[in-house]
Length: 195
Image (cartoon, rainbow, N blue to C red):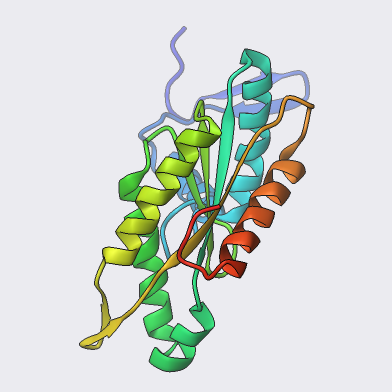
């Protein structure tokens, strides 16, 4: 017996409804899921999606004995951008930074808006050296990119902190904490750099 769209299946006291993939109801549920996992401003993954994904990626890395790195990225002096050019300009900068990062990472990497002006990139099967190189490419792209809003050029740079999953059995919290410490080092050392 082949199921058709909206067929009902009763198992005990539970009734299941079969919904074909091309059904409008399925599209509605897909859109609801997308809205809960995608950042509305930048149209990249949001923090909720990232928090779920990092747990999966750490499990996969441990299971297959593969490396995993994390890059935390922060827009330098973002408050100053908002104060000088306005919040609409700040929003435009965040969208463009997200787009610039997305163009420089692999499709296997996971990009998410981690916080206000912070982004995170999970890089499966990339060691620390590779993650540092990727972060440096992204940093240079943002530094050279011309950010304009209402005919005004906005100087934008980013700082990056990189960490790699340790062999000790560290979890997501430790991986993020080390990347955050490195990000802080980059900012303390003058910003617009990778640590």
